Image 1: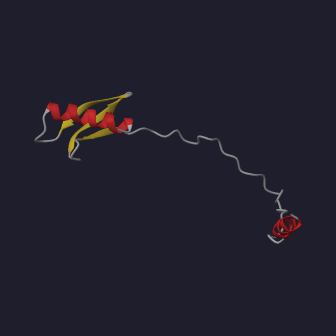
Image 2: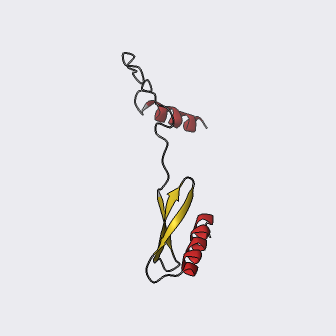
Image 3: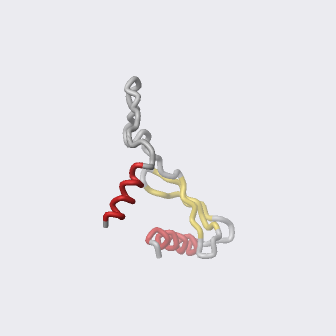
Length: 92
């Protein structure tokens, strides 16, 4: 037991000085937690299960609308892409 205490004390003293020098001439710089509130995306791109781009929707207020469907896709494809996006958000 005495050997363990001696090893711990020796290890604690050989790591260098514990005292840190503080420069009191310059005050520490503090910043608010949120300097700039992050903005959300201005658009949302919808992809299907295959990873193909189906539509891009613009953001208006707090909702996405005015979805522009990519050529070759139908309204059903857009709805399925919305479901796919929702499932991704849920972690499914």
